[in-house]
Image (cartoon, rainbow, N blue to C red; front, side):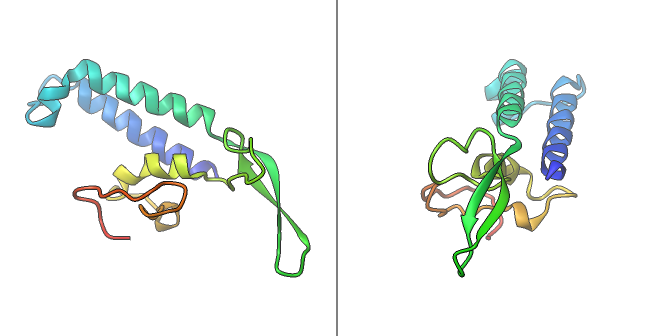
Length: 127
């Protein structure tokens, strides 16, 4: 479970290092955003990651009507339909890094997931 958190924190650390590298030539989207916005975006992602973490037990029911206890996201366990960890929010945060070493396909969330809505992401690999 912590592998996804570790993976994302590692990616954010790399992003921070890239943003702070003076030899980087910020062209295209980077020059439009600027370093300040990129640093703020990384900080917000870290805050989201801190809020969404495994912690609560969720009870689901198997086909025989027997309870199954699973770990749910503490932030997403507020309704009668809790999300099993890793929740869709954290899986979506990982999606831009799907082409990086260490990304696991089991973390991929379909972009037409019923709780996500339909969206098209330019440059993303097909699910």
